[in-house]
Length: 244
Image 1 (cartoon, rainbow, N blue to C red):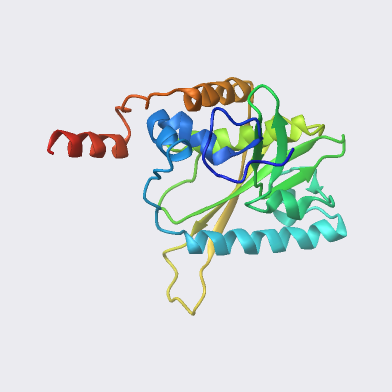
Image 2 (spheres, rainbow, N blue to C red):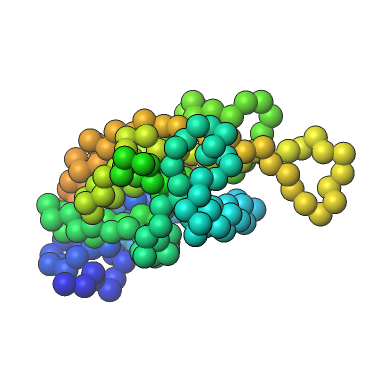
């Protein structure tokens, strides 16, 4: 059965509901804003597009694809002693497509869950590692220890879960290819330079299915969830209501 045409959730519908990993993250961040978006069509304002990050993402994909075609280890992987090569698969372009991604039907919710990945690396033992590209421009050392990195880690774990549901042997170890723009160059010369690091992350996807069930339960309600205390959008709505 194809997914329903409407992007809004209808509790009475028997059709599949296409459900991105981003929407699951939105639910975990704020059930109220998630409900307003997926059930009532009231979306949060769009943020500014990260066009430079998108450019870095595209360039990294092209670069790793060169080594994928030759089935050779990339110098960065060699530098960090990662014995793997970029994984070659006929569906890679689909997996990278934001509107398709890697998909699976979660029967308990009737959600067609999907997420678009950046890369997959293949190890000699047959296991695969999920890889995500990230770009920033900051002083100091790069890490995965900031509060907002929690969302990155959940993103990695959802991808690991999706690939496992599709029958792939996925290592708990995923990798972030982390690019940090250099600000101390003497001149611009119409080019940006980056320091690039690879950060390993041990994922645990045991939480994913339970959160999908909670997200469906949220959408099945007839009442809008309460305001979330640490959600800026909720607090803004609350303030508007109190002043009108």
